[in-house]
Image (tube, rainbow, N blue to C red; front, side, top):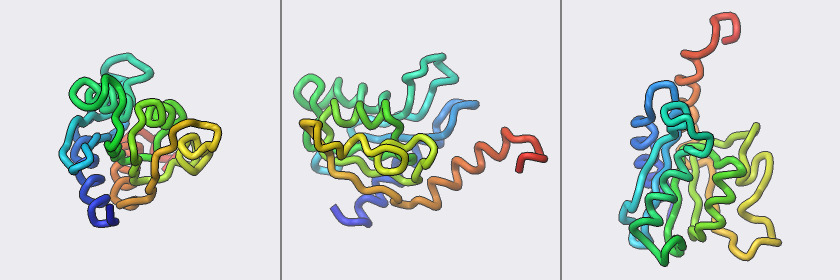
Length: 157
């Protein structure tokens, strides 16, 4: 897929992020089939559900597994997410066997797809999805910056 195609995927993930419940970090994830059809989408909902694993990626992968693939295998699918996945979400991407991971903003503090760690490209793993990061990075980062700006005290800004 080309950059323009990946930008379209991230735009859909941005739509998913906009649906995050109040108080949850607005991260959106969407799983697309090999033909580009949307299979599932989700937004972070850790705060809303009280579930520490309710990251957008995990929720979208769970939903996609219910309707696509061989039980749980999402071979041929692409996971598009607005923020670089953490270690849990990177691991879930590998375990679900998605073919591609496309993300927007880099996350230098917890990112596990090239920033802090590179879980998905570890040569010791039996499955390594293709990765493209930094797609519509500024747009994705702006959503997160706006969210966190409302949660900081004036002297912290």
